[in-house]
Image 1 (cartoon, one colour):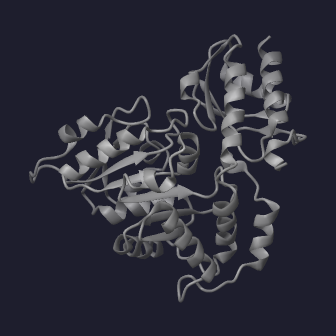
Image 2 (image 1 turned 30 degrees about the vertical axis):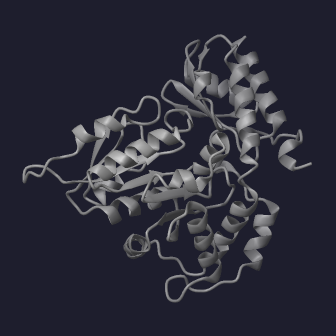
Image 3 (image 1 turned 90 degrees about the horizontal axis):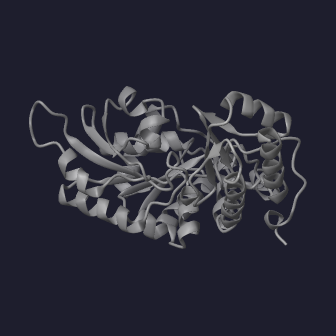
Length: 350
C-alpha cells in the first residue's frame, strides 16, 4: 500500500499552511546524487533538458524552460508576450495580479487590467469590452491570462469549456493566452481531463513542481519554441540562468513520473477536512469550492489570530489571510493529520 493511502503518524505539527512545505521524497533525494550534470547556461545540462522535454510533451507544447519559481515563470511569460507599455487582461483574484510582487509592472513595464472572477474565472464575454481599440492614448492589449486551478477562489477547477471560450474570444482579437497552471495537475486529476487538453486552451502554460508535486524548487514555462527561447534570454536578464541545475531538475523528473496520480489522495483528505469543519460553529466555508486540495474558512466566532494560536498549541498550523484561514493538504499530510486538525478545531471552538 502506498504511503499516501496509509494512516501515518503525524509530525510534531501538522502543517496545513501550504503544499509548498512538502519535503522531497526519498526517491527524489536519491535522484539528486545520481543526476547527470552540465552547465545549463553554457552548453546544457542533460537532466534539465530531459525534464524540459517531459514538460513539453505533457503539455503538448513545442518547448519548455526550467525556472526557479512559478512567479518567475509567469513573469517570463508576460514579458515574452508583451513589451513595456502593453496591457494584460486577467482576473482580479488571480495570483499574477495579487501575489507576485507587482513584477509585471516593476520589471516588465506592463499594465494589468482586471476583470471580476468571483467563481475563479472571468466571463469570456467581457474580454471584448476590455480589449483596447487602437488609439495613441491607450496601452495596447497584448495578452489574456487565465489560472487553473484558481488559488484565490479556493482551488477550484475552471471548466474546460470556459477556458476554451476565453481562447476563442482571444483568438477573435488576435491575442495570445497564458495559463498560470501552478496546480494544473490538481485540475487534471480532479476533472479527469488530461493536462495536455487543459494546456491546449493557451499558447503558453506554466506549472509548479514545488507545490503538490513535492520538489524542493522549480517551475516550467511551456509554449512555442521561439517564445521559450525569448523567455530563456529574459531568464538570464533576471539572473535566473543557473549552472549545474540538474540537481534541482532531477526531483522534477521523479515528480512527473510518480507524483501526479497520488494528488487524488490530497483531494480526498481536503474534502474530509472541509465536511467536518463545516459542521462547527464560528466557521463558514463553501463546500462547493473544495474541489482539490485547498480549504478556505471564514472565522466568525472569535479573532482569527486567537484561533490560529490556539490551533498551533494543538499541533496544527494553517495560513492566515485577513479574517480567513487557508488549509492545504499535501503529500506530508495523512489521514491522521486530518483527524488531528478536526479534533483541534472542535476543542478550540467548543
